[in-house]
Image (cartoon, rainbow, N blue to C red; front, side, top):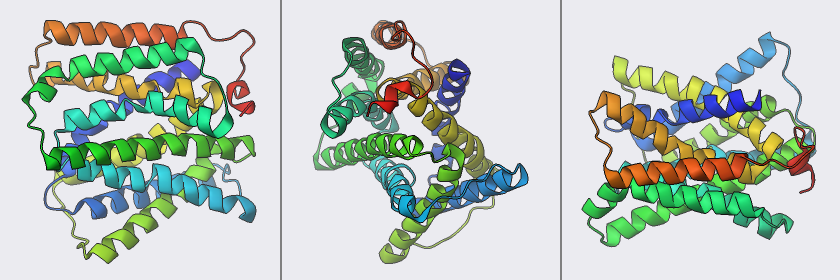
Length: 301
């Protein structure tokens, strides 16, 4: 089941870049993020109520659900969307893959947990592989103050995402159901971004075109409801360090889609990058500790 959730998340989040790209334009970034998570939270709430799986969140845990919303459903997306205004999306994707390393560092700082050498080595190989895959984009980019600002925002967004992994793992260790916590956190996230939008004077316009509406639905339901539920379940089962390797796999899926949809040709350098990513994947998942059961890797934190 974990392998299925892993593959499903990689497939979904590896293709959301198309939908995000389609949303950029007439509607302010803040408004698009609000629409996405307001819709996702409402759909998830409704599904949980209809299936009688909605679990109450005790008041003492609500601040941590709000913190999860800040890290996973608001601040990180504000950083990523804004970063794409200053640097190519390929570079943002490459920076996001560094979440595999951030999760290892954050787990070390917050929990004092020493990284497994396979996970650390695999993460480094994966990031190097993504750098090779993005070589042409990096080589063609002109570095300036704006580029540095965009890279800084992408790194900050990645750190927020990584911190959100640890917060979600904490919430699950305290008995909070992933889907119920996500439903609350997504609505919190939509409210946070809405406040930011109002403070900045952003207009809540809407694009009723089939492309925008279709992209919004894809990002809200598969991209958020299914993707985040599956991903955070894996965080609980395998630990934040291993789960974050999925961020390295997302650009590989995006590249594969580009080969068929846009006629992208894999260069020798890109081929080396792909090999490094796959080698890193084998290191990270090729040797799980004996006796590992769902939740045991995070239970020590």
